[in-house]
Amino acid sequence: MSKQIPKFKNEDEEREFWATHDSTDYINWNKAEKITFSNLKPSVKKISLRLPETMLEELKLLANKRDVPYQSLLKIFLAERIEKELGTH
Image 1 (tube, rainbow, N blue to C red):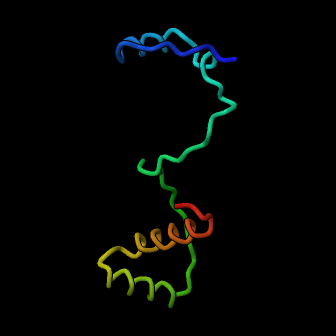
Image 2: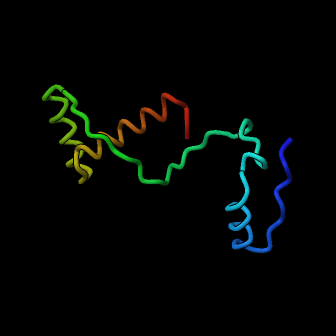
Image 3: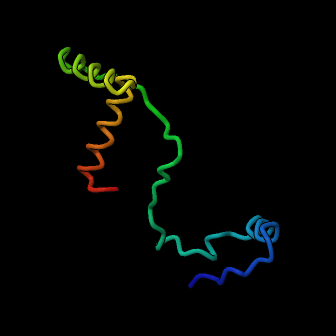
C-alpha cells in the first residue's frame, strides 16, 4: 500500500517535499502507463535508404507540387502509414 501524498499549499512546498522524500513510497509504479509526448521534438537518426530512381523522381515531383523538401514529404508519408498500420491517432 502506497503512502498518501499530502496536499501542498504551493509549488515551493511540493518541490521541497519531493526533494526530501522518495516517490516510490507514494506512487505505485506497477500501475503506471506508458505515454507518448507527441509534441516534443523527436531525436533523429540519419539513415541510408536505397530507392529506385523512378520512385525518387516521383517523390521529388510530388514534393515540388506541395512546395516541401522531398525528405520531409517522405517522413510525412511514412508517419501516416505507420499511424495507419498501428491503428493510432
